[in-house]
Length: 322
Image 1: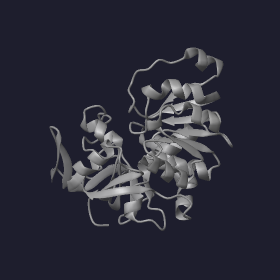
Image 2 (image 1 turned 30 degrees about the vertical axis):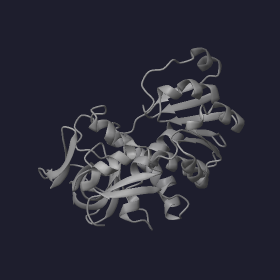
Image 3 (image 1 turned 45 degrees about the vertical axis):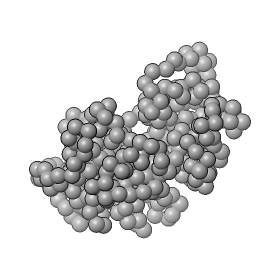
Image 4 (image 1 turned 90 degrees about the vertical axis):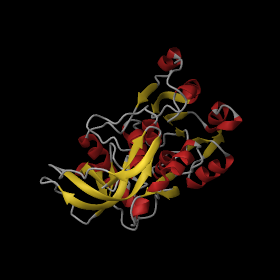
């Protein structure tokens, strides 16, 4: 089979060994589309190695058709169209994944749309409702909200009754986020977001892929008993924490990643998506927002587009005709 191999600072689409037969609850998926994530850029730069035992090939989510089943698989069938959350390996003609990390393509969606679902909706759901423990009516601050995760989180906040304030990198992105259901927002190039968020009202939960450079201002707008869930390091690894504010307001700082979680953990998250999100996708109440797609051979263009923060929504790579 073919897979995208890293050779120094280059990525090359070339022949590699075929996958061994699936074991236990594993399935093989013939990939139609693969999602592009910032984690791919970090791994490529040597900053985010795959978990032990995971494929070295980039790619954390795919859509395609099931082509082989392990002996203990119960819920999937050969030929079924699915999407999958991976620990790696998505930039390839085939992937091997535990069935617990696989969901059927929602009715009414195609394989292209389905590839834009697993990583962003699992990340958004995990950090808003499981780690963040959003309660009825609580308000949310979403940073980098024009990303794939951000645009999914905006829609989840809208559908589940949580007013959200967004920060983005341009006025055009802000307009798009407002059209998805954000109540208000701020262009980060206009300076600190603090006063704008205070005018909106203190927030109970912050979903932050930026990290260090936003820590102090996040604390200033986070309400008593508020939670700050950090999911990325775009703004650096090190910052000063105001312990006094943390104590007096009973703020909670939560670090969260999805990739290295076990198949059991990922299965529980995807199970919640199947119950709460998939029906809304099928009814058209939620929708994947896709910015652009490229053939797998043009991966460099896709990565540069993401590195330039030029996207609003998800970026995809086409591996095979769907």
